[in-house]
Image (cartoon, rainbow over all chains, first blue to last red; front, side, top):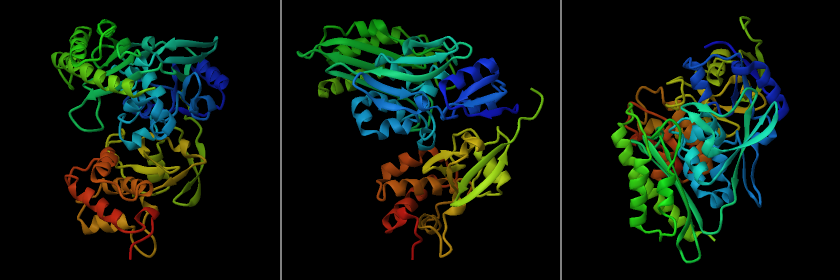
Length: 290
Length: 168
């Protein structure tokens, strides 16, 4: 491994100036569960690793009146061990509690999972179906990008030179909103998704679906937003038939590849099934939500 | 950059003892423990966060020490397998692993013990399902896990296991 410096700035401004100075010769360190493995594997070479966990904004986990403010370096366990957050965002807990095992969850952050931009990331689909927003700081100030548009290719995101992810904002869910995420892996734990599906539905007072979002993992170069499948649910009752139809449409919106974890055909089929099942859980949660 | 980066000074507490060391900024906590401090009880398995053999406790949370930089331990508390037994005897988990034959080659054992201790400190009487879920980040290629889970259940049944006190 190429030797690098360890830098631990304590303000957003310092992080930006450090990243601007080093350019692509620096990376941010949050939980390290991806970046240290990639450095050791020689995927890229850097001169500085910038530990962002000393910056208060990146470690903030706050449930405000407007929604959830999730610092980019907050480790997964803090999400599911916070009773208030877990109750308000069970769909995000679905993801936070399946990324790696307990050791990984002590370190790995949802912000890091997003920046790593893996097509199989377990948290990005959950964020998308919650209409989450990435809050970015950079040399030209702050900007916001919808999580749905944050990833631009395998391992590639919208961050420009000197920019980094400060936090993720998850708006407060509407009344009768429910969300869920499921993935398929051949083991029970500790594996990378062959395919995954996140879904959210919002019901009106009569129990009809008035809004729906579906996002699919590991079936394309980035997480896929299955907007036609979601649109098929509008003004419908949350029935198994409606969800099966949405699953059929979602399967058509994928463009997976064959790899060591599964064939493209298998992933299409998984998308169909996971979409249906995830929608069913999301709808149950929506019925239970105030 | 051709020059070797400056070493980082790390002031930490390892198994209750204050420790001041210099580490290369790219050295992992695992390397710091094994190569700088000579604490070789923590094992290197995969060195990429899959196997859990290098599990240690960092400020009370279990982590894979291969995926932490030594420099990150500055100001933190590290607890390793070396701090588990007491002068008066083994930790109840260690005793149970011996009695239940929960190890064969032994490479994964320190990681399992440190992880299991963290579970019992939080949840003194976990279900079998909970034990298996908690230990999913620790791989063992010898035992087939049943004996490990059995040993954790046995230790959990002993009063005080979660407090780190020795049995008997």
